Length: 216
Figure 1 (cartoon, rainbow, N blue to C red):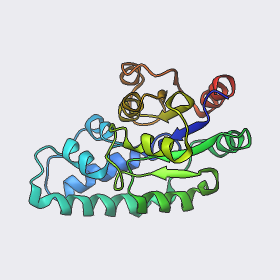
Figure 2 (spheres, rainbow, N blue to C red; figure 1 turned 135 degrees about the vertical axis):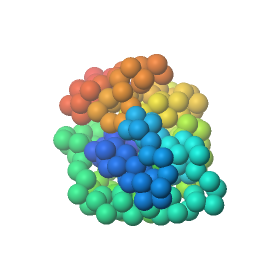
Figure 3 (cartoon, rainbow, N blue to C red; figure 1 turned 30 degrees about the horizontal axis):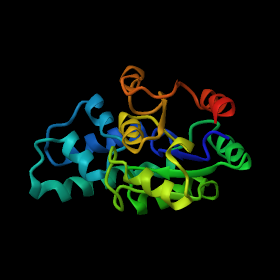
Figure 4 (cartoon, helix red, strand yellow; figure 1 turned 180 degrees about the vertical axis):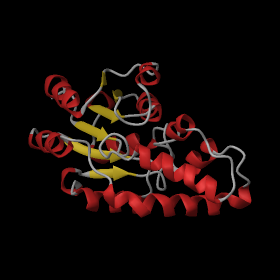
């Protein structure tokens, strides 16, 4: 086993939620009469903690309107999050990795409350032994989430891999000294992910499963 610890991003990697996040950001801006970011800009912030995401998506957002922006974003996202689905093959992939003896964890830009809600809705809670969220650690690409997970299980960097759909995930992996594995079916485009030199760049959960069977 090369990678004892396998860490997954959540949105856009396990859950097909990137489109819903973009729409929630855009709708929140519209509600508040703020400039509505283009889809590419809104997609780019997926994976960051909410504070960083709002600052990047709406750079001219006045500080006194930040809380209102967060509240409108949460309103729109939570209105439909129960309808979001996992990417096909995700439960089977996680079950196989768990049975093979890997330690599975989540490192996400979601809040702790948001991740707990998502774990319950998705039915994936039993597969993960640990998780870290953006409201209890530094936001990606700071390495704190990965560093804490490795320390919790006593796993070395060379035995850890971070799997995600954004450059934020890959930069966090680099900053923590671990391998980053990219998937292209989420928020960031293939070409952008390749710039950050992942060990592989895979296009479906099926491809991800095959790669992990061979190399993990």
